[in-house]
Length: 84
Picture: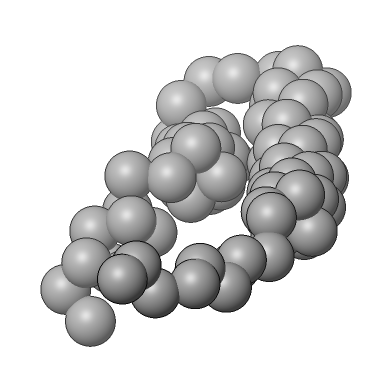
């Protein structure tokens, strides 16, 4: 459980999503930032999170395919006749 939370907190997607939320809240709550600029920054951060998710999904699929290829490439065990 602890490792899963540590992996979540250190993931790129989580950090960028958290940054997007902080930027959005900071811009809406008192910092003098143009709303159009704030929306563009927020959208860019969310697009990055989505793109990272797609990349992670492709990475997982590649790992599964590589594992299947390795399993099929292994030679089958050969029976060895006992020595006399």
